Image 1: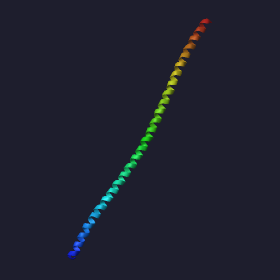
Image 2 (image 1 turned 30 degrees about the horizontal axis):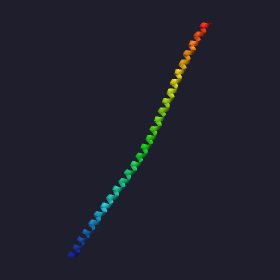
Image 3 (image 1 turned 60 degrees about the horizontal axis):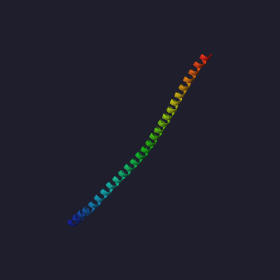
Length: 99
């Protein structure tokens, strides 16, 4: 190769280097953008899962509230039945005395 051929090759390498470097940067930026999209998708899925868990928690809290209300009704009914039972026993004793 003549010196002009070597100079042209050197110039071609110098011209190609920035283009190669620029292309590598673009590829890395594209890869980073793809990672950003994947992270964003993962966040969206986690948000959906969090919402689902919050709904399940709300449903469980409602179930506990309903059970508490039912337990309170049972407790009141037991007190009422105990009172009625005592009243019946007392009336039964009075009736026996009257006979």
